[in-house]
Length: 600
Image (tube, rainbow, N blue to C red; front, side, top):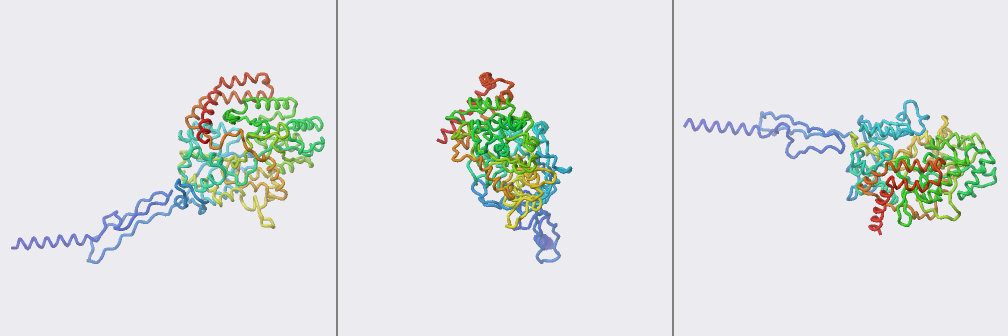
């Protein structure tokens, strides 16, 4: 009997012991019903809070509840998950960021270029007001790396060879020399499409303009290799300008200069009657861009220093510029002008107007290529108080000619930015780039800091300051704007070019850029929008293109200078075939035929 009582007492004791422990929570385990929240997108993942170990209760009262784990606030305010999107994740409307959207000490390197380093402070671009304000607004610390423009190709090659590409690179693909898809596949540049949740504004804007804008931004339906600058109010970026005060002195008017023959007459008169040293200025690429100066030949007298020449189609035949009969006629004309002393022999050193500014402002030339916004700057700096530049319409071979190539109005700026695939924080880098396409980022980047770049006039309209229009360091307003607001030659922004004409008389200059528009342009020779080579086709072309580019560029420029007589043109064409041009054109032609059949 005693043994039974003893067993019963032991059983009661064990039950009491288990009852006393049942109200606690095992160490490190959340209470039932509580859950640890997922960290905010882009935020560092925090370890869940560890619950306090349970203690045996002294009474039968309910145990204290273990506090739910708390989440550390994210240092990022990314757009991911905060905007309405379509089935592909593309934003349906612009997105406004909380500012700043980053509170970390991370540094993003941005490989850019400054075409006027003489106007930078000793501390460099990071100390400029615009860049400092962008940092305050975004919270992102950016280190600007600015190699000299003339050595940028070599600088890129060094970075590529050392596998040390900066996070962001202006014109990165230009210097890479191969296709965008190659750069992504080989792990050099990021596919921004994979990060579209962090770029709602850029992908939204890609579909707001023309089909060509979309097709420029996308290399494939699921591939985007760059943030490309987009113009909201485009006019042709550049065109031919001429000295009207010179024309008046030789008895001509700018309205008379409609054809190349009449242009030659004006240049020859400048040379012989006014003793202008070199009446015409050209660049190291001859034209500044396809169809800008020599549009009447319906080709591109533009020598691409980094790759193959422009492609066009004539009666459904694909061909390269710089290789056909009209290209021969264009270079024959230019060789004659050059030998007559009408073209500045310093052309190989001119990558922009800045290098030829001494010629432009000292009555040493009478015809050049400019952005219209540069006209008042060069007039103001001229040694001649009567200096007056005016834009010329696109020049024709004969009056009434229809232009068919390279005259489509372009919404894209010169600026674009690629992202290194090895960037340590791609969501942050993508967000920073996307901010420039947001309502607040686009406005600020286009106009820059108030009080430095612009101020309100009596009508409540933005107008440029005297600092911009009459810069004390002697920089033209065009270059000041590129330093103190977005540099649309390099940076990728949603760009409002009206900033360049926000001064008394600016509307007249803006209208000069409209003079370069071609009414009712159809673009019969332009390659169709949406046409792209496949990765395999691009790779095959790359195998042939190296020697061809070198031979083509050197020989075509030798025709221009007269170092090679025009009688050797057929030998030049045969040399192109020897270098593989026929194989490249065959690839293009097959791809074009397949595209046209699919899109008939």
